[in-house]
Image 1 (tube, rainbow, N blue to C red):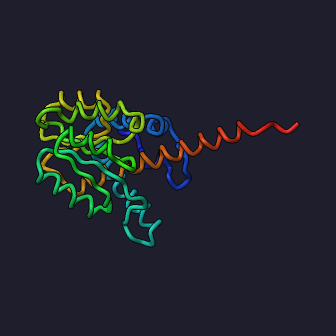
Image 2 (cartoon, rainbow, N blue to C red):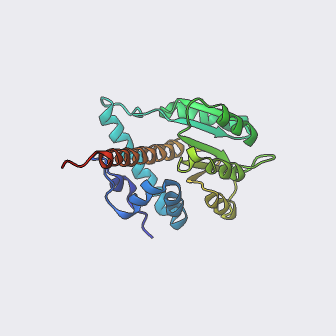
Image 3 (cartoon, helix red, strand yellow):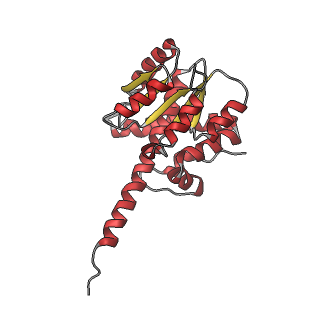
Length: 219
């Protein structure tokens, strides 16, 4: 199975969605990426490598030749292991994603969501945590109207498919395995950023269309 070329399909240079897989990304980003991951993990790895390369090139062109990310994402990372949170903080700062909030449990994460003055753009959730696990937290987040399509990346040291199947069923977008690889993590966050940008473009088009339809028709 060949993974769809999401980079070319999203066509960020023109702000257009050009083929069926990418239209699905725009309409329900988390579901589409989950299907890609489940369909062919090997092809997905190549896809992420391409996204990482092309995404860096696009951002470099937009930022005077640097590889800085155009828009800093607001990320909430949840893991009961403080060393993982420290590693995430270092990796995300190196990638240019500086607005990171961390939580050590699902309960802390829900409190952070309730107290947030600005919405989060992406979530990193450990699957195995004491008490309420990451899959249950994923479902809680998906139940919130503000986060129906926000990328959710699961973090796991588990090797079986069953926990990931449950995570995707709960609304997860993607996953990374422990031990964490900084390059892979940055690439997957970059994909989440591209999906967010695509969703914003679609929302802007819908708003413009509503405004145009609300205008009176000239007699």
